[in-house]
Image (cartoon, rainbow, N blue to C red; front, side, top):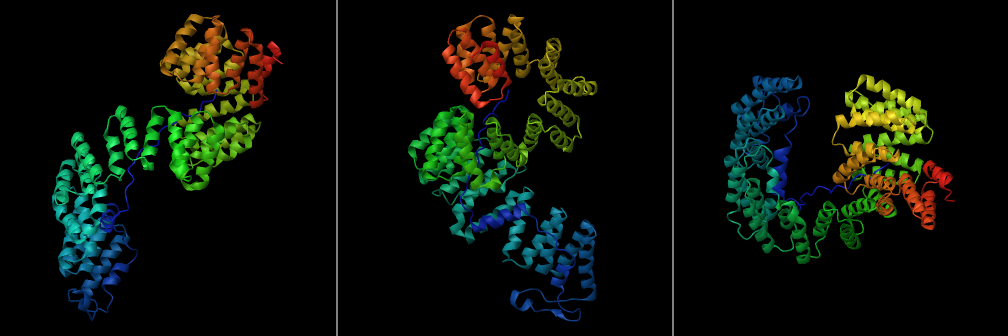
Length: 591
């Protein structure tokens, strides 16, 4: 039976205000090392005048040093660049560094710094950057690069004066600077040193909410969560309309406290859409889907094209089995941002598949990109086989790479599934038999062979494979449910079936597939009332022909024939070609 993938909350991330100029260039320095230009472009930029003349065209206006561009100097420039071109990075960097020390020219020091960074020689790059700063004290790019190098080297005490200069030179950018200061730190950063640096920087700004926010992050990074929460509360009081401290506050709380905090924050700031979205995600985590959907809807009333609300509400609707609403919302999200919603095409394929629109489902699955593409390709293989396009399914399967044991086992499973969907059970069994000769302890292959054996009417082999599967995977809900249902369906060893299914439903109490199995077992045990309640619940959660068939049969046996006919008609409308329903009608005469 098919299952709709569980709805996972979208990971929460901080949305920051636009970066100020000061921090923007600083972040660039920390993340993107200068690239070495091709050829001898840099050398010619420095040596742009004939060797017999002095470099003085820029010196008059830029206070650059006056130097004779001798043949020896020009040759060294060219040697440095040619060495870089030929992959001799260490030699090139050292050559340019020697030139920077010799000339004290900021242009040469800049190039030396670029080459040292580009070849991964960061200690040498710091020496070159210092020559650059000494030669051109007012150079903003020089300070930018040096600061980036100091931060990457975890030399935060030396970086502090540079950061203080940024704030002094651009006081209007202080708020944006502090709001994004945490982006300077990576996994290797000394968190205690980062806290000391942050506290030095924010000292002159006690009333600036962004400074309190920066302090909160630095405190949280060293495990002082209670102090961080106090700073976030202070930031909120200083700027009540700013959502970022509230959202970060929620992230720092234990999981069981986040929802209540966000709901309380919503009451304080009912117009902040970001709080509604974050609260909706927490409700999804708590599986309170109806409440989450209401919040997403309230956001969409204010902002009909809010992408997060469209995606979130669409996935919630899918979880609630409201496929019409899910299809519309996810479709709107894809049309609104096609480049950001590649994975949503998978869910659109699921919806089309459930509606028995095979061609449409295949088109959606074919367009899936990213992490869900392998799963989408598997569904394409199965759908092609089910629709009789066996050759196309096998061709698609053979095009998939299989260079590991796991991928080879997966290919065996898919090939067997092609033959299974085509109802050529001997072929499917042969593929699985051959696969198990190579991988005798593959639980997945054993499970798949049990399914095919069951379809082929070989009860003993199906049961044997499932028991072997449970030896390999004793806690598998899939295995517990499969063996328990198999025993119940064959109306034998019902006590053992009861034990197996009780273990399965204890692990996944909300699974309609397992609820159906338990309901069918209760029917076999003669407990009609309990069976009817369980099967009604399972059918309400998953409109599957097999679940419908079980529910119809229990209703019929229990004397509710009129209701059984209604369920039968609805199920047949959803899947007119269902063999399960056709066999049921032939056996019971429902219609």
